[in-house]
Image 1: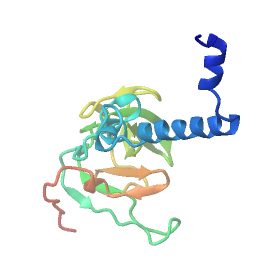
Image 2: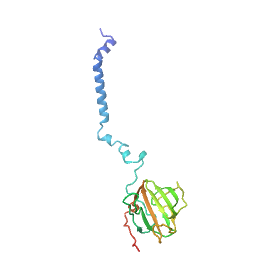
Image 3: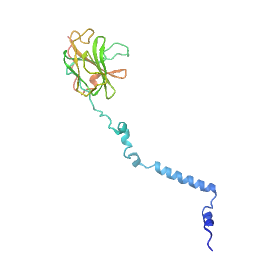
Image 4: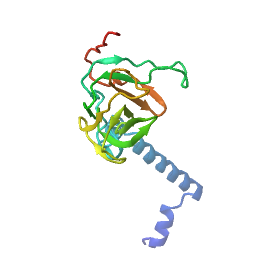
Length: 201
């Protein structure tokens, strides 16, 4: 005579509760280990490796060989000579040969961060897309803070040399670049053409 279905079910689950729990835990551990150890395929899964090599949202990272362009075509009159200490004397930028009225162009794309007068000289500062800041003086500009500029856009014109200028009595464009509070050599950011220094008269 066949056993009732309820008795058959009890015989199937006749193991003590503790042994059933142990078996269940072991099964869960096996499944979890298999899911987390997928081998090389998991490391190369689409979107995983690419997220580390790209910007936020999967945008391509900036090209490592992206270069700035000089704001005026003149030769270097005075090179970058950073001070030994932040508050010390030195030359925190480069002076480029130029004449009053020459067009000053953006070395790289960015947004105007300052346009005004400092110590009697017109100054324009552009915050570039890579976080660096370029400052130019003495210049006149019609741009305003927040204006967007592209690389090579005309952003200012060079003023006549004034009191306290960098190249008196001659005229020149002073170009400074900062990362935060640290001054950088602007010419190290441009293409690798030889730097020409004019003789000191």
